Image (cartoon, rainbow, N blue to C red):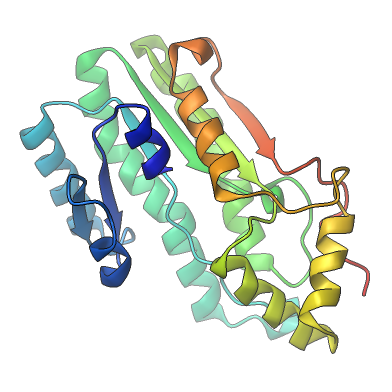
Length: 236
């Protein structure tokens, strides 16, 4: 997403707790190493953004973790809470801090990353699905509250996105079901009409579009970029 916005000519500010990942970012991006679930850190970040940039046009509330993969009766409470803290509370804290900056300008775009897990039931992923369904409700409310101030809000729901993050999910799902990573991969892909995973650039392209004037009356929407997922749970 950051690369997509940079390519479109935007100034970029990335917040992440992954110091190595931040170090790999282009030198002209602003970077903050932090935990998005830390209330004071998030407040400080947006105060700095307002001071340095003098405004904020687009917020991508994208930070997230996969959470535990387990049957509901085996889900650890601490893992459930941490998943909601990062995926949901982090998005809430970012929105709360960004709203007054955007309201003062009378314009802005807030983009949330949900998931197809926020549209369907998702066996063995209760914390993640709960957080992603909640993100959609948060977005709908924010769109209604801030719309009169010229601020739009939408949610992008990726399907399975190629990359290291999904690999961990596949491995844990395979271990839980006593099968192989490849079998889980095929099952996930088979659950889409296009029979494939999507790529990160597909999500970035949608984000850039939703932030553009071409989407100036698109708000309060849950938009899937998933190759049309019908059955996200492979029957292995």
